[in-house]
Amino acid sequence: MSLSRGVKIAGYGCVCACGNSAADAFDGALKGRACFGLPAHRVHSSYTDTYPVFMVADDFLAARNPEQSISQFLFIACANEAFAQAGITPEQLHTKRVGVVVGSSVDASFHCFDVYHHWRKGEFSAQDARELKNYLALPTAQTISRHFGFTGPFQTIVTACASGTDAVGIAKSWIDTGLCDAVLCGGTDEISLSPYDGFIRLMVAGKERCKPFSKNRAGINVGEGAGAFLLVSHATAEEFNLHAQGYVLGYGNACDAYHQTAPDPEAKGLIKAINFALKEAGLTADDLAFINAHGTASTANDPAEGVAFRTLCPQVPVWGSKGVTGHTLGAAGAVEAVLTIEALNKKIVPPTVGFEQYDENIGFTPTTQVTAVTKRFALSDSLAFGGCNAAIVLGAQDAA
Image (cartoon, rainbow, N blue to C red):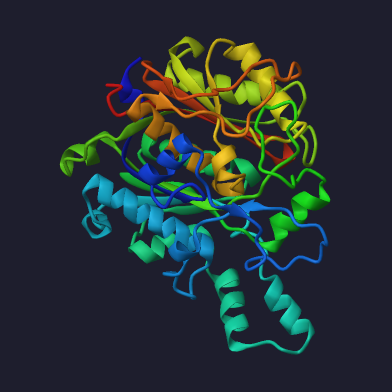
C-alpha cells in the first residue's frame, strides 16, 4: 500500500484508569495496573448493591477548573500531551484550518443529576447554575475548539460507544477531502450516574473486575478517560517539520440497526465496518499485527466480535484492553486507538488482563502474555448501542 493514502498522526495523548499519559497508560496495560474501585465519592446511586468502576486518579482530576466538565478537562489534558509530543503549540496552528472532532456519550447527554435534585428540593445554587449553563451552552467539540483558539469546523460525535472511533475516522476524512489542514480529534467521557445506573439496569454491569472474552466473564465495568490525536495533512507536516508518530489509514462505519442495545449476533454491521476500513487502507487481514477489540466482557458483545474475527481475521492476534481501562464509553475508541499506536511503536502487545477461560462460543483465545509483533499495522474496532459499528486501521510511526 501507499502511505500517501493515510493521514499522519503528529501527536497523541491519553489518560484513563491505567495511566495519566499515553506512555503511562500503556505501561499500566502491560503490568495490569489500574485505578479500580467503588465510585462512592463520585456517584451517588440509590442501588443497594455496588458495582466497581475504572476511574482516573483523583490527584489528576484535582487540577480541573470547575468551569469545565470532567470530560472536557480530560480531553484538553490529552490534547496538550499531543501538542507537546508533536513539538508544536496550538498558537502556531492559528493560521491553518484546524478542525476539532470529539466523540462523547456522557458529556453530550444530560448528566447534571445533582443539579436536578437540588432544583427539586428548592436548593438550586450558583454552582448548579454554572453546571447547567456549561451543559447547555458549551457542546464538547465547540468548547475544545474555543479553548485552543481554533476557527475551523467542529463536531461532537455521539454514536454511543463507537463515538471515539468515529471521531478519528471523520477527522481523517476532513483532511482527505481538503476541508482541514489539521484536526484535533478523539473521545472523552467521565463516570456519572447515567452510565453507572444505566448499565446496571440493562443487567450487563459486573460486580467484579471484567474478564474480556473469558467464558466466566460476568459483565461490564464502566470506566472514564480520554484519548486525543493531532492529525495533519502531508503539506502541514512538511511546513512545520512534524514527524509522524503513526498513521490513520482506513475507517469504516456500518449501522446494522439490529437492536437498541444488543449487538447483531451475526456481526453483519461489524464485518462491513472492518471491510470498509481495510479497503480504504489498501490492506488485508494478513497485514495486521493484531486487533485491539471492543471486548466489553458482556455475554452478547464478545461472541459477536468472535464471529467477525473468525470470519475476516482468523489468524490475527486479539487484544482486549478493557481489563485495564474499563468501558470508557464514548472515549473507548480513542483510548484504545492510542494504546494501539503505543503497541505498534513499541512492537509489543500486552496481555488481555482478566481473561481466564476459553469460550467456544467466541472461538479464540486473546493475548495472555506480552507478545512481540513485527507487522506495522493494526485494527481497532467499536460496537455501540443502536447497531453502530466502527473500525479504524492504524499504522506505526515506522510503517513508511
